[in-house]
Length: 152
Image (cartoon, rainbow, N blue to C red):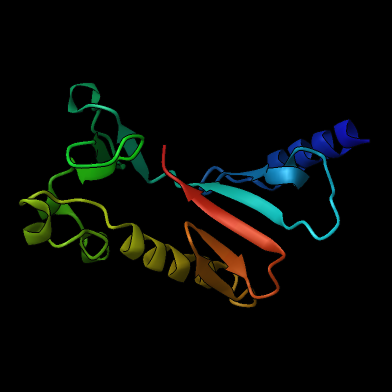
């Protein structure tokens, strides 16, 4: 039965996902399991950002380019440094960056500001769905849906 549910979830992802905002079902329900009381987990892939491990690999296109910066971070963590020229960016993107004075003059993406901006976008796409920021995710008021926004 789990295999059928997993395949159904994959088919739903293909049919409901869009090029502009692709998504993947994840968590127990995405794996075809249906434990009592479990929520539905969705990973939204943010296509207008692209993350590179090193600035040596960067290919600048229409997307906002971020490069991983592991200086002064704990093991297995990274900060995302803006690679795209900040002077050509619209204000709503600049508002998602940490204050340069706090970050040794680097333009780093602020997780908190990114989530606040993304929350506004998600609320605009579906005003009836009320979401809260809960850790790294967005959760509906009934705790039935968790949405994680992913950069790749």
